[in-house]
Amino acid sequence: MKVGDLVRHVDDDFYLQVGLVTKIEFWQDSNSDRNVGVDVQVIWGDGKTRLHDEMELEIIVCQRDGKT
Image 1: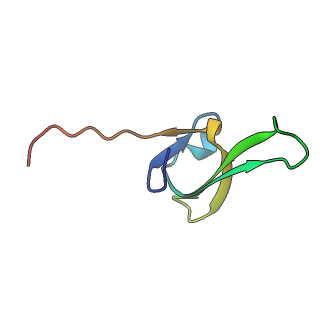
Image 2: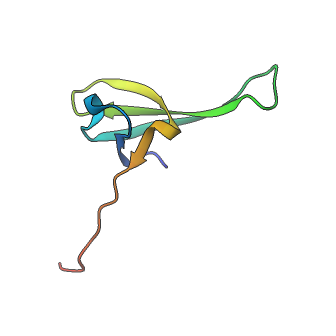
Image 3: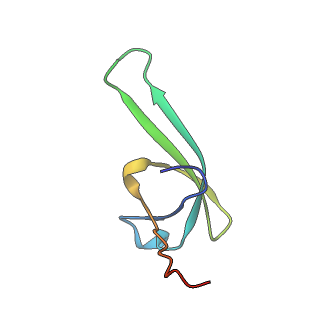
């Protein structure tokens, strides 16, 4: 996943709208080498920006048919 990808939320019907990834942050708990994660900031079709765990989102793949 990268900034600019179109995504949708995988679990909640509320998030079936398309969102745009605007920021990705990798983090690690300073007290534990094993407590790490990725926060993905998404702006949704309703204009609201929310943070999600990367596992909550799936990338929407657009296929091109080769026609111009």
